[in-house]
Length: 439
Ligand code: GAP
Image (cartoon, rainbow, N blue to C red):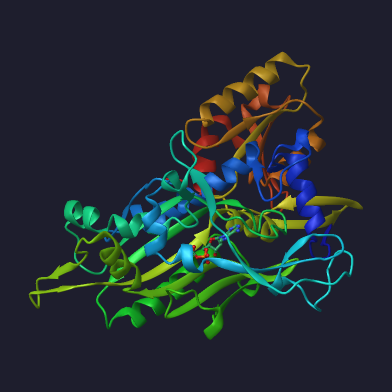
């Protein structure tokens, strides 16, 4: 009855995101702004679900990781100590003809990718976005929008240790915005100037760092699979010497096979004791851990799993996207894991001009709403309503029909196999909670 169609291209994803309200161009009515995107009603739910499951799995369900929410604006010395002022730069080339700028490592044959013109020699361009604190725009008031959330966790190491009394190994986790003045934002939300990160700084005893690094690489890889990504579309790639960041001893990327090729979702680095030592040096404060076993003060090593929320959202969208031909017609369906699906259940009356059906459907929706994200819709025919929910990735749809008035039962339709079952109204909530594995 149904047949899977060929693999997805980015055009189909971008168009679905706009059409269904996942992602809009930023400031679209003014012609848009490069490198920034707005998440619409379903995009914001998807992103929130990704952050929630990450926080639940990495923080709330573990004893040794605690959360933090540090400011985006930090003391400018932080960025000197971290090495970002000196070294957080990409090589940039200009086209002598059309004047456009490109990252030198994104240009293939030394000619402008837009017009074929001659390019300048590469020069380094710092990716941090500058801003000024207070009314005077001078050097003394200048700082940066953070390019990673990590530094907030390093500078709070002693505060968190004091209040939590954790023993090594322990971690600090944070989710928040980061900003980079990318030379060439591209591939939709993949490379943007404003994005969100989900980062863990995991502090371990020196000497145990390599073993912990390996454990985190495996754990973070499996996390993407756990939420439904097809294993053959996810891989690990180790950074080669020159590719390593200035702070890293070793890094593995979790990569996803996007329509534009394999690309990084998350980096898991062994940052050694670089960051804590740098902040101790620049701040003049001791940053160390007292090891009760040896009676020594030690500077822990750091293993850092650092993922992007927007990249995860894009990969989950691409991975969930399926086109099928059903009875000669194209069906687009997002097969999200139930924990990630923006809407868990949609409720419709079969006939919107029958007030008794409308009232009952609305009543069922409001009974479900406290337990799961529920949507009521009666703005189109039943076929269109199903198609809309398939494209949003809603796992279940409930239809209230004329028979419901007699047998007090409704139809529950499964997004993935389109099968329909009849369920008594008083059992609908528990049936769905069980199917969605919500407890
Ligand atoms: N604290 C380490 C760090 O920031 P990174 O590899 O530069 O490492 C971590 O960034 C993650 O942040 C990346 O794996 C990616 O998911 C996300 N990210 C980085 N730059 C991004 C950008 N310009 N647009 C969207 N996401 C980005």
